[in-house]
Structures are given as structure tokens and as C-alpha cells.
Amino acid sequence: MIMQERIQTFFHEAIDTLIQVSENLSDEIEKASLLAVNSLLNDGKILSCGNGESAICADYFTTKLLNHYIQKRPSLPAISLNNHAITTAIMTDYDSAEIYSKQIRALGSNKDVLLAITSHTNSDNIIEAIHAAHDREMNVIALTGTDSSAIRSSLLATDIEICVPTHKMVRVQEAHLLITNALCNLIDYQLFGSD
Image (cartoon, rainbow, N blue to C red):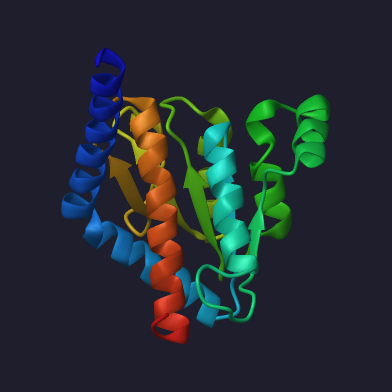
């Protein structure tokens, strides 16, 4: 019985966090989807990056845009900056803080949007990615957790932060995945209609 109670507690914690996100962050999620759609409608693309589990979430988001989310539709321009060969080459020759910023400076334009995903407070490479995006006059959508004050202070008023209201990293990561699904759903709905 103890194991089943633990399972139920685990799920209830996750559900409670997701309910908080749906009730408190739907405005930010909507604005982020509008920013992404505006970019896509104006010949822009969405660049995404993250570390560890957040990199997987960024790859997932890019896959859904390039392939499809629910309905079959044309591919949407998106690039994940998490290519292992590229990031390790940059890290070897330069600095790990530059693994995304060098790519953004080479690939980004003022029509693009950067989706930066992090559940950590001090991700230097994400902060540098945000600075590089601003240098290229890109807007930024940042998926963060409550411990991401360094990321928050790097954002401009025109950027959008979607901050999951918990200090538990696993809950932040779970919510980030659902938020990326919500963004994909809203992007598809705005561009192609209901599924």
C-alpha cells in the first residue's frame, strides 16, 4: 500500500503543478504562440535550445513543427540548436557558454524567435543565447522555473517568460513538456484551423 500511496502522491503533485500552470500562465502561453505564429507568417523560423532534459524538450518541439503535431500539415521552419557534434566542437574550441550563441549569430535573423528552455538558475549558455538573440533583434520565449532569476534578468520587455511556479526541477520539466505541446497545438490551430 505504501508504494501505491507514493505513486498517487507523485501524480497528484504533477497534476497540481499543471493546474497552476493552466490557471496562471495561459495568458503567457497564448502570447508566446502569437509571437511564434507572427514569426512563421513573416518568413521567420523558431530556433530552440536547452540543456539536459530541456534539450530533449527543445528537440521535441522542433520535431513537432518540422513534422506535425496532431494533424498532417506542411512542415514549419524550426531548428534545434542541440546538435551534439556542433555543440561539442564549439565547446572544445571556444567556451561552453557559447554553444548556442555562436549558432544564433550565424543562423538567426530579426524575423526569428528563440525558444530557450531551462529549469536551472545559472545556465550561462542559455543566458548567452538570449543575448545573441537580442543582438540579432530576435524575440525570445523563455520556459523557466522559479529559480531562474538570472534568465529573467536577461529578458527584454518584448520577450515572454513562461515560469513554472515550483522549485522542484522534475515538476518544471514535466510542465515544460506540456507547455511545448500547448504551443504546438496553438500554432497549428492559428495556422491551419482545428484538428
